[in-house]
Length: 321
Ligand SMILES: Nc1ncnc2c1ncn2[C@@H]1O[C@H](COP(=O)(O)OP(=O)(O)O)[C@@H](O)[C@H]1O
Ligand SMILES: [Mg+2]
Image (cartoon, rainbow, N blue to C red; front, side, top):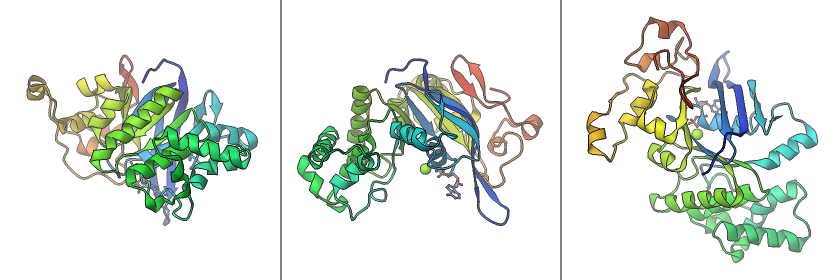
């Protein structure tokens, strides 16, 4: 989980709005800017529907953005075309939340894992292709004879290993892990997390790790980004975010997690959220958290708070952070 300051990914005012008819637009990702450092795990948390999956997919250009730019090692992903785009796609992969839905049930494992190699013309001879699949199966803790089986013959944890092998096939530098363990039994979640961490160490991978389990995200992330209604409200190292959150929404999320140290638990600030999560079709004016924020003032309704560095390497979008 080592990281230096070199950015692998730079996200600049990224927006993804979905047209849903009747002149209505879902502002799923609504102007977010941040970087992901080479070799780090950036956790991304927030309530269901706040735009995490859309952000992850738009970052990889699986969705075309409504506005904004994303750079990979200084190269603009959003304007890349042809062979340049194809080369960029090899470097960036995704592991999906639901290993049941993301693997074609009619395909044998060997074809599922080799598909990215086939698409990019990297499979080689039949023998080389088979060897590559065996090596990938071994790397994710499966056996070479699993290659001949179909997805339904595997457990949820094994299917996610197949999804990870597929993501690794092209030797990427960056992987978006979109709630990769949420659909798995608690008893096997740690095994899949350990596998992802081993792979990161061995191949120097950079992860965007999307999750809603805050405790788990702290454990595996170097830094954590908190999303609310399509916006990034806070970004800090795991330690700072958990010990000293600056945004009231982050504080509210932290209030819900028990701290092992009884003195800290006793004295920590508790914020209980009231009200409903507003619709991303009609977000509140100004700060979009203001309708649920116990500290909101007139300024919060009038002005969108800037996402600014409120402490060293800690960013928050709050007028009063
Ligand atoms: N393809 C789509 N078309 C229309 N709305 C979408 C689409 N994908 C996501 N949304 C909406 O965008 C918002 C963010 O969704 P999503 O990115 O899936 O959130 P999360 O992953 O944080 O749960 C939600 O309101 C969701 O309903
Ligand atoms: Mg999601």
